[in-house]
Length: 245
Image (cartoon, rainbow, N blue to C red):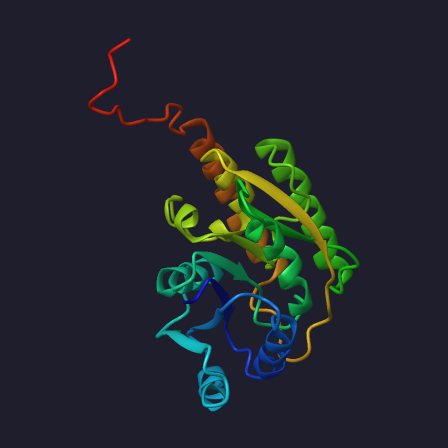
């Protein structure tokens, strides 16, 4: 029985996907039964062909494809919907998130009696351009001041969470950058784990700093609104034998 589903959003990552999948197999050898779901987000470079070529040798590998690109959050959402595991782990398809970090992310959720809903990776020693690091630092600082989610690096693709809790979150594009705040909004405990970061092996980033900044400004205030409008009461069912108080 599958316990863990590893979801990889990928767009035009044909140059990186084989090495990433090989790394996942090695890193996850000691984990409970798992599957790997690559969500090809409308690639036109043969990413889907590269994954299909590996499926015969990797029985735990599955492929989901979007006919056109819907973005990273849409790809993660499609992967989680298709997942068979109760626990989800995500990492980016560009190879910059080391798969060796997956067991560390999943360990707190696998612990007996864990009350965690989300474990979020936070990159140290980022292998990005200076402009990208500065833009990310500004965006994360602004987000932290407004949302107060205790997360210094919400854009990290390495995350692990409970599938049922994720599917109860309000879906919107770019939601993957706000998962700590959204999980906390629903009353879940969250944890953070420092993770390593690698330089991109091949291809190029699908987003510019300007694109991230423009959509981030709109999303940030939308998420702040969602946090203020959260449901503040919790229901519980009363059994037949319970007396009214």
